[in-house]
Image (cartoon, rainbow, N blue to C red; front, side):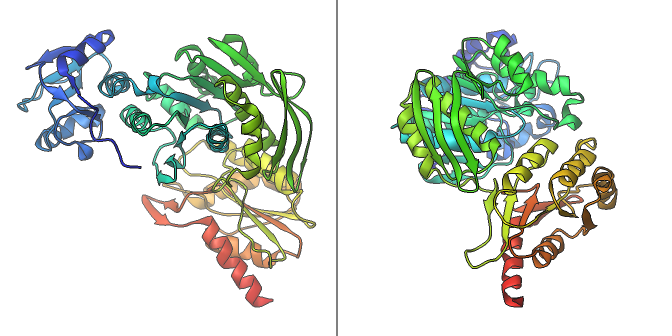
Length: 496
């Protein structure tokens, strides 16, 4: 989708100062300059933009002005740069970025229905389902998250699950001006902690689940949970949809502001009424408030039933046609890197690639694939370096309990020694006594698993999913599990 370059009329710096009153703004220079956009990245600045210098961004102020920045925003207490354009200082430049972008773009997140989905696992699949459901119900929805930005056939990749506040508002403005009705976005715990969505108006906020992840950033599970809770208690969505089968979902249910819909098994606002979960997918009936709808979906696994329930709850909270939305699930597109099949009809083994990179997600993926084949389950997996080390033996434990064979390999080792990561995984895997080996070359590990499998076996390649790269040291190299899986399958066919 073509990126918006400027709002219809722009905003003067003086008008922005009034919009940012909570941040005690002070201006040096004329407040009559007109601002056409807000940018936190100096490389993207063009004529008429407000450049927001956060942290190390102060070192790029001169570059931004040379590229046409009409004004600069800095944190109070920073030295005032002498750059020939007005300088706006605020008490919290990181939070002010989101509010400035909303103001300059004329509050686009209030002009469309924004859905924010948070949780450890399931955000991406749920956002896909909700986007498709809205479209099935007659809306025009965009999607913003781990897999990038997508709107009506046009897609851009992303480097962050939830982008910075200026990009969120810019994307929402583009959707609104193109006649879109909704934007479904993933709200990561990092984004909620760092204020990237602080000024976003959420029509609906939704919670999937909470399990161990990102402790390298948050430090404790409590801090991680509190970051998620902010979406429901501090950002004040109009409505919340909460998976109450998750223990922390019960806490959110008690504390969320506005209208709240409870989703889960056991007679809640959205609940299954006898849904079969098998190798063919999900089939059955679901009650959504006072209606019953039929579910037919090719998605496999109990965790995908959770995602469907949450998605229907979001559709109901938006006031859309839940019957049309449910009917649309039968034709919902496959989510890249989420239980994505790589084998062809002529193959005698099944190969599935999944993004599972937490103990809970890996367990859910393993349980889901067990129903797909007639033979054993083999898992190829690793753990990311420079990330929470405590989850490594737990992921090994999940594989030891639920797979018959395993190959431990590199994920994104980053600056860590791969063998050290592998040994931590082994500590959780070894006590279960299953056959396993360590092959740190990920391509070789995938090939070895595919060639060693017996007819009817299922091979789960976990951890990277859709990612087309691998980070080894400081280098990001081209690498795609799906490409390597298909290459290995071709070798297997040739050997047969």
